[in-house]
Length: 323
Image (cartoon, rainbow, N blue to C red; front, top):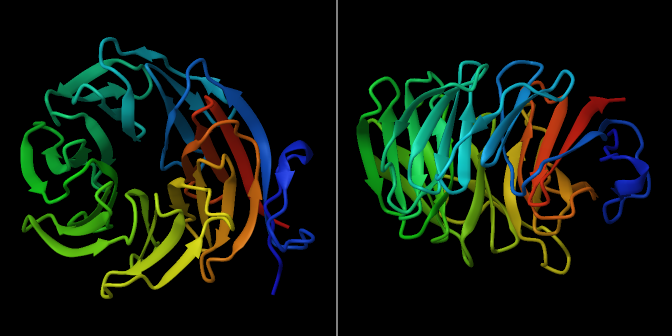
C-alpha cells in the first residue's frame, strides 16, 4: 500500500505524528501565499477544472487561479461582515451580517439583486442548488429557508434548530439537504415535503462544519467537541470518532472531502491544515502556514488543488498530485 504525505514548503512543514517519511503517493505542495487587506476571508470554488476562488470581505476580490490576479472588485457598504457565499460562472451570491442576501455578476461585479430581511439575526450559511434554481440559507436564529432564484420568493421555511445554523449541504437530487448548528445537532431534510427526516446530536458542543461523502452515504462533522465524527444517517450513534489532536486543543471550524473520496481536510483554531485518510480516518499529516484560525477550505473539482483561508487574511493555495 503506497504511503501518503502532506508536503508544504520546507519552512512550513510539520510531519504528522507517526510519520517518518513521505514515501510515494499523493502529495500536497504549498504553491502560493496571498495576503488580503482584511481578516477572515470566505471561499468558494467554481465548477470549472481550473477553478476561480472568490475571497470575500467588505471589498470582494475574485481571483483567477491561472495567475492569481484580482478579476473584479465589488464594494458593499453598510452591510456588516459577509458570512457566506456561493459562486457560479455567472454570479456570486453572498449572505451578510445585516440579514440580506446579495447577488453580483461574476465577471463585472455589477449588482444584480438582493433578498431583504432573509434572516433577522444575519445570514450565517448559504448554498446553491445543483440546478441553480434555488438558494438555501441558514440564519442566526436557527431557521433554514429556501428561496426561488428567479423571483427571490420564499418557498420553504424550516425551523427546528435553536441556535445559529453554521453550515449547509445539499444532496445531488436537490431534494434532500443537511443543516448543522451550534445547538449540537445536524438535521437531514426532505425539502419537497418540508419535513425533517433524521436528527443526530453531538455529545458535547456545537457543530461548526459538515461534509457529505461523494457517494452521499456518510456525513462528517467537526465542532466544539474537537473531534472528527463520521455518521451513517441510518444509525443514531456515530460510526467513528477521531480526536483532532492528542491534547484536545484543536477545534475544527471547517471540513471538506475530496472529489475522489480518498481524503478529508480539516482546519481550525490550531492554525494547521490537516489531511486525513477517508477510509480509516487516520491523520496523514498536518501543515503550518496560517497565523490565525483556518475558517474555510475547499478541494478543487479535479482534486488537483486545495485552498485554505484564515482569520489572518492569508490564502494558501496547495497543489495535490500523485508521484
